[in-house]
Picture (tube, rainbow, N blue to C red):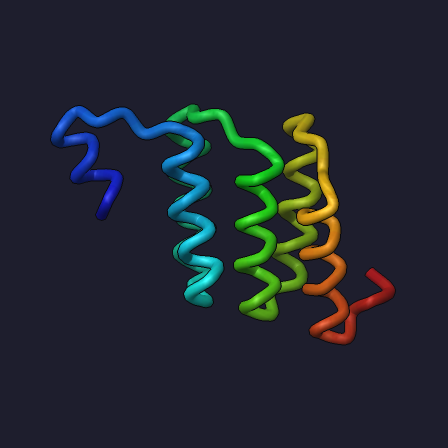
Amino acid sequence: HLFSVMAKQEVESETVTFNAAISSCAKGGEWKKALQILSEMLRSKVEHNATTCGAAISACEKGGEWQKSLQLCSMMAQTKVMPNVITCSAAISACGRCGQWEE
């Protein structure tokens, strides 16, 4: 909804805006919404980075979605986004939380 309002008012969405929205979803336990925003970001051709992916992985971790966390790690590799401590820790935590530490 926020991004459609911004578009109507001709406010340009940028990486920082999307990252903030994804982080807010992560903090609120809204992993599905975080992934929807990430998808919208990618569709809009807005550049994503390790912060973007870390926030999305954290959202999945909080939602117990370890498979989705690993999918996001794969997406990072495919799009040449370098992982950082936050992205790796969140993915490890997601797997560990669900008893999937071997993944």
